[in-house]
Image 1 (cartoon, rainbow, N blue to C red):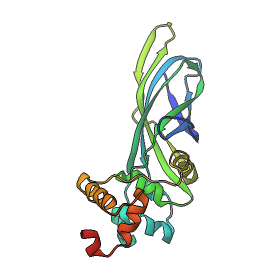
Image 2 (image 1 turned 135 degrees about the vertical axis):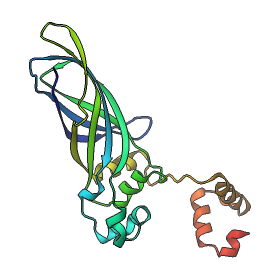
Image 3 (image 1 turned 90 degrees about the vertical axis):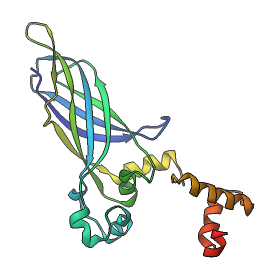
Image 4 (image 1 turned 90 degrees about the horizontal axis):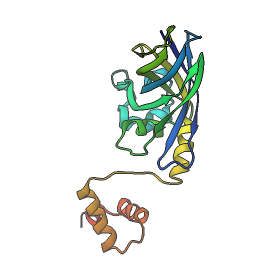
Length: 216
């Protein structure tokens, strides 16, 4: 019966995808080394282990929107779910290097985006919790299926630079901000009324305007 071990060996930015995509290299070793694994339907839940790194005063200031004042971080700093990902691993014997594609978002309504953007250097401490099913060939050449044990996981420290390079590739000199529809309509009317050509200039004008001017 298959006994799988997992480790993360690296992460790359995927170029020319339809949306921001990161690829994690996952080394899979079957301790039953002679067994033929026909395929693995592999799933991964990726957690951000925010308590496993240190934060500079600048980090604390940039993450205040997410965790509050630093003197409360003993209560507010908790691991968070980043995302789920899946991949079908093809036939192998002994071991294989697979790649798990992980879609990423630059939506600042998502807590993970706020966390990644708030860090300027260092690593992002991640924990991959694996699940799924293994289809393998037993000693009688019969095809068998077994679930991946619930305790299979792998730690990885993703360099902050990799995530920032990904976002700079897909959104150069830009950021995405989702607004409530009524708020967008107010900004849109302000832009039209003032004859402002771009959204960037509209936001700049709104930020620099006096409160009564903005309300009008």
